[in-house]
Amino acid sequence: MKLHPVVAAVTERIRERSATSREAYLQRVQAAGQRDRGTDRLGCANVAHAFAALPANDKLRVVSERAPNIAIVNSYNDMLSAHAPYATYPDIIKDEARRHGATAQVAAGVPAMCDGVTQGTAGMELSLFSRDTIAMATAVGLTHDVFDAALLLGICDKIVPGLLIGALQFGHLPMVFVPGGPMPSGLSNSAKAKVREQAAQGLVGREALLDAESRAYHSPGTCTFYGTANSNQMLMEAMGLHVPGAAFVQPQDELREHLTREAVRTVLGNVRARRFTPIGQQVDERCIVNAMSALLATGGSTNHLIHWVAVARAAGIVIDWDDFDRLSAVVPLLARVYPNGVADVNHFQAAGGPGYVIRELLDAGLMHEDVATVREGGIREFTRVPSMGGGLAWRDVGPSGDDSVLRPASAPFSPTGGLKLLTGNLGRSVIKVSAVPEERHVVEAPARIFDSQDQLLAAFKAGELERDVVCVVRWQGPRANGMPELHKLTPPLAVLQGRGFRVALVTDGRMSGASGKVPAAIHVSPEAAAGGPLARVRDGDIVRLDAVQGTLQAMVGAEAWEARDPASMPHELKEANAHGHGRELFANMRRHALEAEEGACTWL
Image (tube, rainbow, N blue to C red; front, side):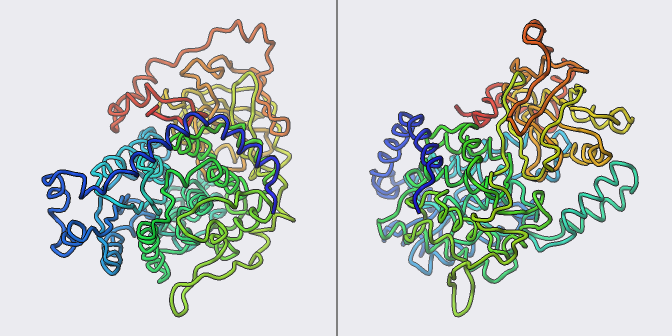
């Protein structure tokens, strides 16, 4: 299938914009790849330290027999349900490596926090910056520089982008990402959301709410909604960085261990055959565009409008929100998965999952097929589904198993990807409309200004928001407080919307990947703390959010608007954001963070 002209044009625009930085990056990758192996290049003391703890047979293999040595970068902890299964993965990987005459070492354990635990708390102010911390921790582990390849174990929100950013600093190595899969379906996400809204209205108490939440989040594996964690997994498939079809196989399925062992065989095959494309070459402009298309086609998390900008920059590639917006105009919505529908990721997988989506996009010319992946068969191999039956094998994905969850590109849920860039005198922002009812795509109402999400929650409880209102929550950007997700605002705003009011949220903060049905202009840039326009808005200003025309506007005359002195972040708020819960240690990140559209990077 011929590549869609808009996909081709966006890719070329990215290539031209990135020419200088990408060439410099590839030169560094090439120089690193031309060096001798670590055990041949390093001093004897360095080598002895690197392998002192290895069993004697492994030490013999890697030093004397020059066998491949695989780095394992593991984000295991048993606080994250999705990452708890990784406790056993290093032993599985080492065993499979030994079976094939190779060795493996845990090069690094990286931090991994659960946004579900920290939502609405001070800990969430470390969440976004944990991505760059994970990237640095990945680099610390790989900088021992005695590895021929790497396996990266991560799933959740900031962990996969952080691992990928760190891995791209060692772009001369072949690497494979190793997922763990979702938990079995529990209480439906729709039912859980209903109880949350009832709790916000005081209709049910803490006991009923905790019971509902515990039935939704109940076992090892990722949460079952299509938020940032599961969007990560879709993007890894679309970029060809997984073993094909590995994303959504549940942890307890016997297929899971076979796919993990196949990841070892895949990365070893790449090293030994000398046919591999190292990760720094694999993640090129086409690969990034493929990830963007897959995100849009599945109604994925808006967090990736920050994370994938940062990932691309780590490979010398410059993308912006205009690129997402242009792709969204031609990439159809093929999936309805909560919060864009009632199905969860297990239903998505049963209906065809990533393989179905990738096939439909390739056949419609909406993904690049001429890309390198971790497998010799290329991205077309990722349209197949793994299964067991006399050993690990792959089969054609076939038609959609449920057209209420997955539809072909010829008959999509929507002709566009459901993401819209908003511009106007309030700055640049994005809105995810794929889960928002069409009659809510335009909201015009008086503004109510809040300096924190707690202020909004208090106003809701006091009955002050029982009207048409655009809630402006500012001082939530990277420099102000680390750009926390404001997911706790979803239930009260949904309640107001359910009562028939015209309601919208405008913020320089983030919303959770699980947020959806309330119109929300998020990531407003430049942020208020950097002198952005949200600092000029006043209570009572009429604000128009128009996701049809792509505008975000305070309906104030230009002369009067420019004459306004921007508000300053309240001193007490600034002090509160700087202390407690380890926030002191992240002051430098807040100080140097780029804008959201630049990936909120702290390392550029």
